[in-house]
Length: 283
Image (cartoon, rainbow, N blue to C red):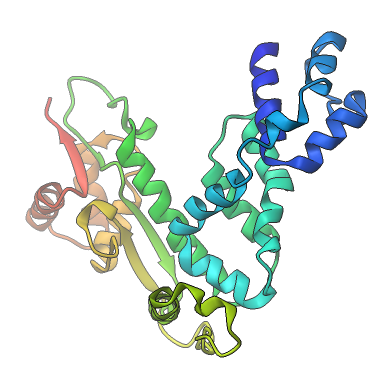
């Protein structure tokens, strides 16, 4: 509907002053491909530019919220590029504008943007996957989880991975890299003005990927702490197979295929339920 498009375009103009200028100067070109008539395009072009600048810190506060969820990833990006403008450019990027028009997640658009930078830092991909997964799981805990809204059938017992739980396989050194960077960020936080000096703490050289065995992680923010658990191969693979509700009998079969006895498979499902890693429904 055109009124929704108008609202989303206006939001894009609030965050992206370059896009706003394009709308003011050449609305037909800037708004090409959108389902807007001439009157609606003219209305956008006639917005008072001062209204878009009422909150001059809008972008900076938005970046603050996004960076708070991706602290290590952002630190690695800035460590390589050395410019805060590299983050600010997110608001002029395709991932941002696509998310705004589709009412998508600004958080996921930001992670897509960071990937699109194609940096040389070899540690960034796995670190970003960990922090992104934590963010996605936190959001699952805040709203109904679409992947578990419908059981296979109301008359069959079923199990599913709980909302806010995910599995992830990353380089074996990933958590060590993250701890090292977090220590640097902690030191910088002790004196905020430290970022202005030349001898402020910097991210030290990190170990190269591939030097240790892959790490099997269960992402579970509700558990507290880092929200990252290491529960072994069988638990990791079993949880990874529970994207949506499956009959309990099938879940037991899946566990047995991983090498468990029937009794141990039943215990595993019971233990995971008690730990909040899966949800279950009786017939």
